Length: 303
Image 1: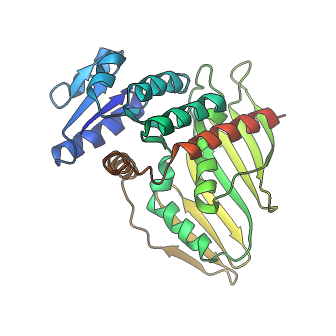
Image 2: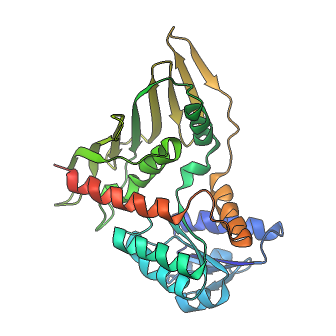
Image 3: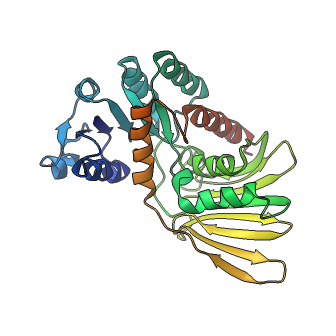
């Protein structure tokens, strides 16, 4: 099997290294890397096939992993699918829900794998929380808190919700199997004239449960936190470190043991196995499309 990675930026380099490691282990046959900036390909010329033309990588690869800017996802994915190539797109799937559902329809018609890179559903800590939630470990869940913050220059032409909201939304859907029906929120831009750099959202579900979601490119404190507040117990999850701290009613604290895993490796292995088996497990394109739809609703709700 030949896997291509398109877009060798900061994230694309991490993805490329995982595929190269799998190639060295004999899991796949070869890796093809593509970027219009040839300087990004130089570190890989001795370990992978490199090119700077989209047509070249689509012609050579069995599956491609798209790590390019958000606004390019639809065009690249559509071209690959119409060329009968399997696709994994980094989040968000697209920035328009009609385009997202169109990609789903093409992949379905052509019997191709189409997945979206919702990386946290591959983290053992999030999988553990899902297991606990499904076993009523928390009792009646009152609400969720999710905080995604770090200090970074704003992305030109990109609202923060397109950059960060896919993670909290997908984590909530993965755990609860539900999507919010309504959003209420406030967003602001401080270093530019428009497009939000910080937002605070409340996502409301049909059963009355709600999730408070705070996103910021302005805070110097990097946080990736999930809190589940329930009638029996509360959990605080450090999503990157994969640490789960449980709080009991009697103020007892417990750090649950979780084996920290390599989420990128597990995600790309899932893509490879899906191509091999024809089964689109775990991070289907429908989830990606519905996530895009909810982000659009969230943006329209902001004051």
